[in-house]
Amino acid sequence: MVTLRIDPFPSADELYALWLEAWGSHERKDFSAILSRSLTHIGAYENSQLVGFVNVAWDGGIHAFILDTCVHPRMRRQGIATRLVKEATRVAQHRGAQWLHADFEPHLSSFYRACGFRPTEAGLIRLK
Image (cartoon, rainbow, N blue to C red; front, side, top):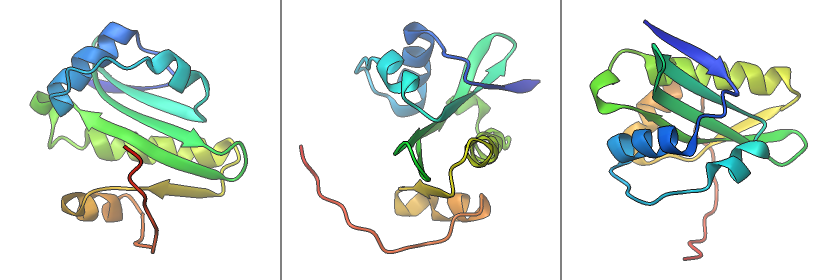
């Protein structure tokens, strides 16, 4: 059974292992600095193993941003990502956010629409 934990602050090794499986990324990030400034983050755990994750960054006011939604490949198609995003939405609202934004690639449109997001116009500049 998969359980969700609010603000679990997973270790760098736990997040790296999930990142490697979910994104194929070998890049190690310093998540401690990121998570300490987040409005919330939600971890999905099967027993004690981190199998899913979502982060909610914010502007310190009314805008929050869904980032880094991921689920371990062997755990996909079980509704875990939907549960993560919906719990992140609930917690963000409870903590005072009035708007929740999500940027995503076109193949994820139906997923985010099913989570309650609607399309909007936005701008983007690639800085690197």
